[in-house]
Image 1 (cartoon, helix red, strand yellow):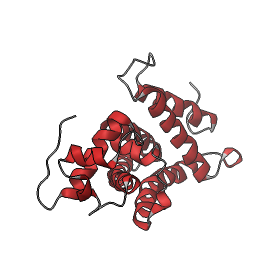
Image 2 (cartoon, one colour):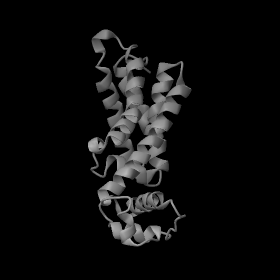
Image 3 (tube, helix red, strand yellow):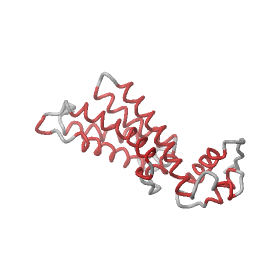
Image 4 (tube, helix red, strand yellow):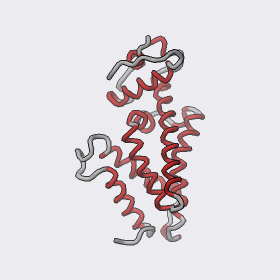
Length: 204
């Protein structure tokens, strides 16, 4: 890692960026506030001007991650309209892309143990992001035969679990090192099988 400096007045963001770098290398519990301060090029005492402790710093990283994630998901969903199916599939692709491009944020959001209920702002931002998946699922589930139609929140949870599983198992390292297939292909085919089982896609 390269030691960071910071511009006057931007200490909090410099610390968040240092936190993200450390998370990528050491995980969310593998570094101290002193290390984050050193990475940002400031004294440990300076950290407490903005953050009460390491969890507070990680929570800010998660908040910023959810904001980026929400924007990505909303854009992906909108680009898929007016097709409910394309919009839905786009959100899955956006999930993988976000995890690949923002690994520090992703870990802070989903693997750090920080609850989205930690603050009102974090909860609202996280719900905006995750709400896109539920919106996409609600729209697409209207095409499922009534007898096979799960509740939209369950439908969204299934696909979220699939997306998260692909990221955790296959998208963290170099493509192909843990699976003979690219993560995007694994998710696409997995969702395809799921949607065929619900009657949205025709059998092959």
